[in-house]
Length: 139
Image (cartoon, rainbow, N blue to C red):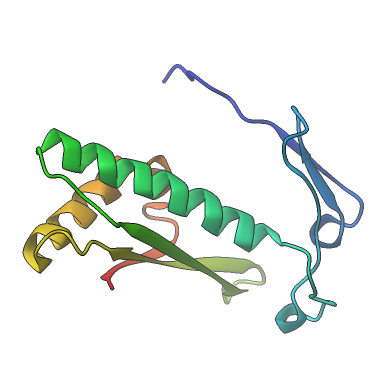
C-alpha cells in the first residue's frame, strides 16, 4: 500500500496522563486516566475517546462511500462508536468496540447491508479485524 496521507502525533509526559500533539499542532491535548481506571478523570480526554472519535468519523465516511456507490441517498445519519478497555487475561489489556448506526432514511434490511459493507471498507475496521471484538448495531 502506498499512503496518500500520513498523520503524526507525539505523546509526552505520563502517557495516559500526559499530553499529545499532532505534528501540525491542530490536535494539542492534555490527557487524563479515566476514574474507572484509577485516574482523576475530569474534563480531559483519553486514548479511547480519541480512538472512538476517529473510528466514528472514518466509519461514517465509509458508510457514505458504499451508499453512494449503490446510489442510496442517506440523510440524518449518525455513527456512534463505543470503545471499551479491560484486562485481556494475558497480563495486558484489550479493546472491544461497538459501532451503532442511525440510518433513518432507509429500511432496516438496507441499513444492515450498508453497515456490513462499510465495515469491509473502513480502514479502522480493516485494522482491527481479527484483533478486536467489533459489534455492529442499528439504532
